[in-house]
Each structure stands twice: as C-alpha cells, then as structure tokens.
Image 1: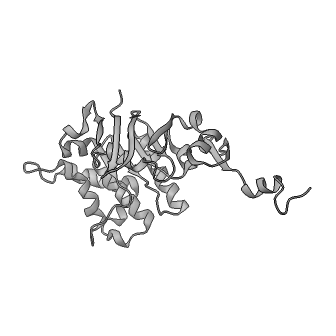
Image 2 (image 1 turned 45 degrees about the vertical axis):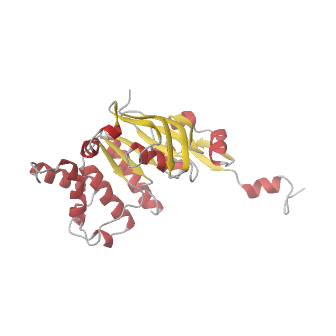
Image 3 (image 1 turned 45 degrees about the horizontal axis):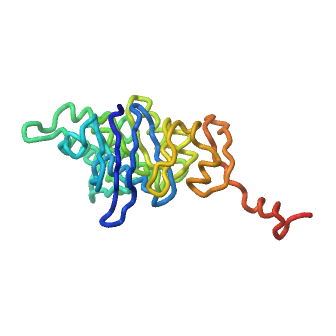
Amino acid sequence: MSRLRADGLTLAYDQRVVAEGLGVEIPDGSFTVIVGPNACGKSTLLRALARLLRPKEGTVFLDGEPILSLHGKEVARRLGMLPQSPITPEGITVADLVARGRYPYQGLLKQWSRDDERAVAGAMDAVGVTDLAGRVVDELSGGQRQRVWLALVLAQRTPIMLLDEPTTFLDIAHQIEVLDLCSRLHEEGRTLVAVLHDLNHACRYATHLVAMRGGEVIAQGRPEEVVTAELVERVFGLPCQVIEDPESGTPLVVPVDRRRSYAVAGGPGSQG
C-alpha cells in the first residue's frame, strides 16, 4: 500500500462540490503528475492530499493513518507542499525564507540546531541559490523565486513533495529548469506529486500520470500506457496525434492543424 492515498473523497468549497467519490493512490518513489482542463479539480485534489482542504466525505491516508488525525508538525515532517503562487513575506531574504522550512522541527525544547543549518545550506545548494542567500526574495526573477520556494520545501527533508503548478508564469527556459530540478529530486529518492498544465511536459517528466476531468480520474498509469489521441480528446476536447518525442521517447501530443483540416474539408482557400 502506498504511503499517500485517498479514498471516496467529496471535495467542495462552501456549497460548490468539485469532486465526488474521488480516489487516487500515489505510487511510492514516483514522479506523479496530475493533468486535466481548467477547473477539473487538480489543485483541489492536491490541497486535500496536503491536508489544506478538509474533505466533506472520504479520507486521505498518510502512512496508513487518516491524515486529519495527525498533528500538523508531524504531517509537515513527512510531506512538503509548494502552493500555487505562494505569498512572499515582505523584505525577507532568501536564507530566512528557506529557513522557514525547518519550522516543523522547532519547539520549546528544540531550538535552531546545526542540523537545521545543514538542511538549509544543503537545500539552497541543491537548487542553486546559495549565492542569493542575502538577497531579498521580491527582487529576484520568477525562475529564481521558484527555486527559492523549492529550497524551502526541500529544507523540510520530507520524503513526499507536493507541487501545485510549479511552472506557472515562468518562461519556457525557466519551466524546463524547474522541471529538471524536480526530476533530479525524484531521482534522489523522493516521491513527487505535481499539477502541471502542459501535457507534453507531464509526459516527459512523469513516471505516473493521473488524468482528470470534471472532478473524476479518467485514467492513470505510465504516460506511454495511457496517453493516446482518444484520451487527449476525451479529457481536453483536443483533436490530436500522439507521436514519440524524438528527444525523450515519451508521448508527444501534436494538435490537429484546424486550418489545414478546414482546407481539406473544402473551406475557403481550399483547392479542388
């Protein structure tokens, strides 16, 4: 049984139900990516897995225990969460922000330690922001800020990391930079769960894919097993071809050229 799973979830914001009877199991040691159209419940599911949203029905289990039965700091020592568009405290430096990742290990009888120092320094080194330690976070570029937030989660030293749209608002170069970093963290032994909008990025980096639509899990498994033209059209409403990515060998979704299809069908400008 996997360390993180959910059974029979009904998820809602006030009276607006987002998902009913939702179940998912995160394979241990996987890089799981959740994909689907806007407002399908991806981020809502991730928030429930992180104990940030209490289900109306159903249970999220962490290490076989209902996650809501665990103390908050205990959860934070097992599971780290990078929310979508995190809010940076005004004027905080990179080192001070990353140090907040050690909060789950602090207490009345346990103050800042050498182990905390090593965790923070190691996290900053792992994501390449050590030289930014004294900089104010708000002064950094979008890609740099995202790496700093990843360092904060990394400093928690949790075996499971949840990432809600970690590439949002980043240009293509910074998107690949962040995803390459996530892939390296996964290769070092962590279980990662991320929400991504770009299906081709999901196919390239994920070892396990969860496709959602309308609050339901439509398919899950290895990208090469589940990503087909039929699935993409069913989930996203997008006619396409699925070919092999020449770089990675993973599925590559190529949308149908609607202009060409229109011309072939005899629209204005077509021949014959």
